Structures are given as structure tokens and as C-alpha cells.
Image (cartoon, rainbow, N blue to C red):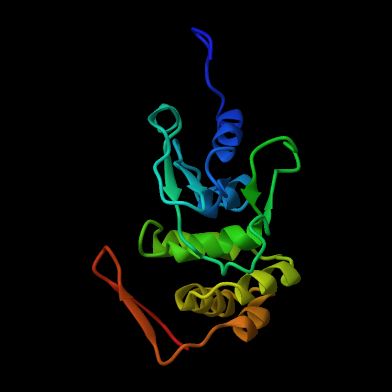
Length: 190
């Protein structure tokens, strides 16, 4: 960077992706970039996913409010770049989760960093998904919480792909419950 230059978000993300394995824009941010959002935020935080635990550099985080997530959401036998593509309007841009992957990434953060009501409202706008992509991702996702949220909310919201989500659902045993940060309890039926 030369003096008085302004760093641009997308080239910086591409630069970081060369140094951080699996780095991509994911979850709620990827859904918003692909046209699925509930409310517009005046200054939205960027949600960036990667395969390794680390912090994003201060020079990036200071310019672009963001949060880095490193969870093993999918099994190791899913190809690492499955469900990651640049945006059609920016083919040379950073990798961004496709809607199916972004939805599951967002669901894994419900009750942790993602509010329940907002996640449900965003999910309601995700009406048309590619069933083969969603099936593949659910088959490789071991998290019971993600499966049950996906299936239960899809049924409650009467989404076209609710039946597929229920068929792919990893059942587990009994109800799944967790206490949320706000003190309420989230309970998901099998």
C-alpha cells in the first residue's frame, strides 16, 4: 500500500485467503451478499470463515469490522471448496459461501453469535435452494443442532425444501436443548 491509498475489502480478502486455509465469506454475510437478508444494518460486521484457529490481522480488522469463525462444520471427506464461489457480479472476487452452505454456517451460530429471531427471519427468505447441494452439505454435517434447526424451521416456515431437510436430518436421541445467551432455552424436537 502506498501512502494515502485506501485498502479495498475484496482484494484484502483475496490476499488473506492465500495465507489462511479455507478463508471465505460465510454465514449471515454470505447470505446478505447473495440477496438474503432481514434488516439492513448501518455498519454490518463481516463474517469470515476459515479452516484454522487464528485471528485476522489488526490492519484488516481495524478497517473492516469483522468476526472470524473457525468451526469444523463439515466432515473431512467433503471437498474443502464445496459450496464456495465468487459472486457472479465479481468473478475475480473472494470466495463466498453459496446460499445452502451459508445457511448452515449461520445456523451453527444461532444462540452463540447469531440471534434466534433474526436467523429465523433470514431463513424464511431463503425459499429456493438447490436440493442436491443442500443434501450433500447436510450429509457431511455432523452437528445435530444444525440439522434440527434446518428441518424444524423449514417445516414451520413451510419452505419448499422442508421435506428434504427432514429426510437428511441426523436425529440423535431425544430433544436437543441449550440455554441461550439471553437466558432463554432453545429446544429442538427430533
